[in-house]
Length: 305
Ligand SMILES: [Zn+2]
View 1: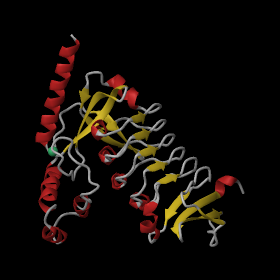
View 2: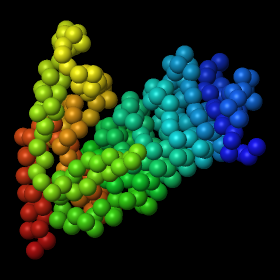
View 3: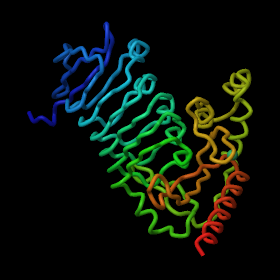
View 4: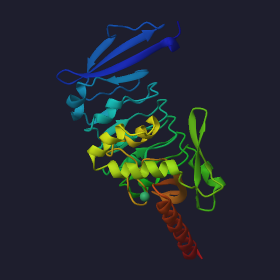
């Protein structure tokens, strides 16, 4: 049997401190007894060939004291949902894994200061990352990013690294400063291509946004919603957590749809012409944003000449 057939699972739990048990699974058989259990007050789980990370739910509250978690140089493709409940984390290192996405729930890590995610497969970043007011250091070197969320422009970052991404190949096709984009699903990944026509918010999305805003402050209406004739897909779109939901780049309203996009290029922390993605909740916000970016571009051109 080759090493490739072996799956290593690390389970974080709590007993007078942070405990980590390592399990090994081979040939479809699950190992019932851990290979090794260690007490790691400040867990450094780097270079352990871990394929799967688990955090037991009862340990989540007890582990909220953890300020750092180092998971670099493993074989992780996803991160467990419980990770985003470890709200004491100030430094998180997930570098040199195979992680494809960072979920919006990273917005719960309100104490995060340093986030190292270099050498992964990350295609897009949630806008919630830009709202972490303590975040100072962000290393995204060598991923698959096409753009950054515009919320990073107003963050308190001191350092950002984005070399070896696809940010600058985007620029070649879009020298005119801003562009509306269309979201396309290609096999299992999402890409963005320049849109040839003005984006119009669909009637479905207009309804979802209107209903969503109406029920936000009124739990009674949410119950009524469950008994309504809305489709399952619409109900799912409406059941987002306000604390981790994306917001409109213009009016800051919570967004219930994902339809209106606009890309513009900006300089940022010594980086030149980085594509930033805006999202708008309504046709009015989208039009206002477009006008604002056009005016900014005109003013920038006038300053140069
Ligand atoms: Zn808006």
